[in-house]
Amino acid sequence: MPVVTFANTKGGAGKTTAVLLLTTELLRRGYRVCLIDTDPQRWISKWFDAAERQHNLTVETFVSAASLQRTVNDYRAVCDYVIVDLPGAQTPLLATAIGLSDHVLIPIQGSSMDAQGGAQVLDLLRYLDRKADLRIAHSVVLSRVNSFVTTRALQAVKQLLAEQSVHVLDTPIIERSAYRDMFDFKAFLHTMDGAKVSNLDKAIENAVSFADEVQRLVPVARKAAKSGQLTAGSLEKAA
Ligand SMILES: Nc1ncnc2c1ncn2[C@@H]1O[C@H](COP(=O)(O)OP(=O)(O)OP(=O)(O)O)[C@@H](O)[C@H]1O
Ligand SMILES: [Mg+2]
Image (cartoon, rainbow, N blue to C red; front, side):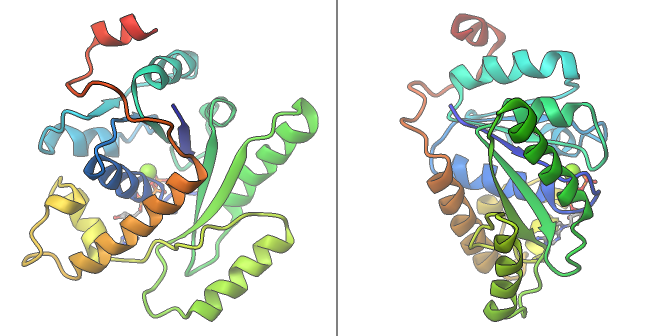
C-alpha cells in the first residue's frame, strides 16, 4: 500500500502537522494508517502515546536508516497508508525514505516562502532521477498559509514552482490554531470539541480537501481487509 513521506530539511515547515492532518482524516474514512516517526524529537510518538487509542493506527518510533526499509516494507503489507515523518534537518534517512516512497510531499511555508529546505529535497529527487533513473512522484504543499492570503497570490506561487516543473497541491494548509490544539490536547482533529477550538469546522474542511487531494495522487486499491490492533504477529505473518 502507498508510502507517503513528508520531507523538508528545514525545521518548522509544517511536516508533522500535515502528517497528523492527513492521518486524522484517513482514519475518519476508515483506512488503516501506519506512521513512521523518524524524528529524534518524537513529536508524533509523544502525541500518540497520550492520544486516545485508535485501533486503525500504529506508530513506529526509533527507526534507524538500517531498519527503515524493513519497517516500511512490513507496514506496506498490512496498512492502507504508510506515512513517514522526517526530521527538519539533514538526515541520512532522507534518501532512504524518498527511495521507498510512492509520493513525497514537501511542505513549504507559504507565508515566508523560505523554500531552502524544500529545495534540498527537490534537488535530491532530481539527482535520483538523473543518476539512478529513480523517478519518485512528489508535490509541494504550501503550509501555514494565512487564511487571508488571496487565491491569486497562491496561484502566483504555484505558477512560480510550475515553471520549475514542480507540482503544487491545490489545497494549501492554512494556519489554524486548531492544528496546534491537536498537539496540545493530544487529540484527533475530528474528536476535538468545536466549542473549545476556534474555527474547528474550517480546520476540518481544510484537512478534508488536503486528504482528498493526497488520495487522488496516491489512491489505495482497497482498504486493508481486517481491522484490529496491528501486532508484531500480524506483521510477521504479512511479511
Ligand atoms: N497550519 C498550521 N497552523 C497552525 N500552526 C501550525 C501549522 N503548521 C505548523 N504549525 C505549528 O508550527 C510549529 C512547527 O510545525 P511542525 O512541527 O508541523 O513542523 P515540522 O516541519 O514538523 O518541524 P520539524 O522540522 O521541527 O519537525 C508547531 O508549533 C506547529 O504547531
Ligand atoms: Mg516535525
